Length: 160
Image (tube, rainbow, N blue to C red; front, side, top):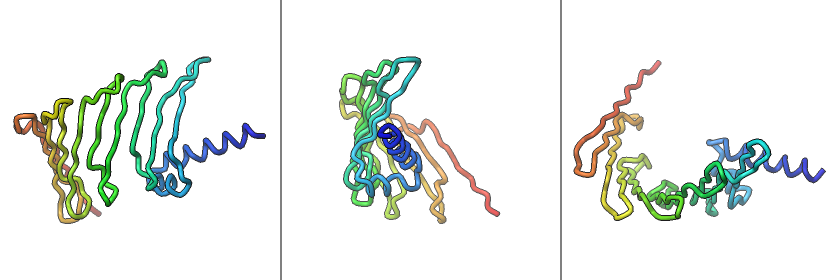
């Protein structure tokens, strides 16, 4: 009976986690601090991923493991008062910082700029996002370390 209850709890947590519209709300409501997953291949079960959340239900750390269950990478997140990610720190399998992202938003919480820095703090990429009067993203421009435009992605919407 205990095993069935455990499976029900795990299934419930996974359902809440996979439901993007309710994830943060449900994680906060249930006081979830971490979600850990394992992978079973054949007879071997290994760590797959561990997600950690703050008291507001926001993801603050994501730890990923390789096929052997050994740490492969980790990301840590910082948020502004509106719950938008303002900094992402990415670490390698040795827990050494290899990339830092700084994100900026406009007054209505739309991401406008993403700056990417290497482990030494040198900017390696910048992405600028533009929006139309309806608040829909219309353009994504990516620049290299020397501020040369390397890609532009335009989004065009059609309506009923």
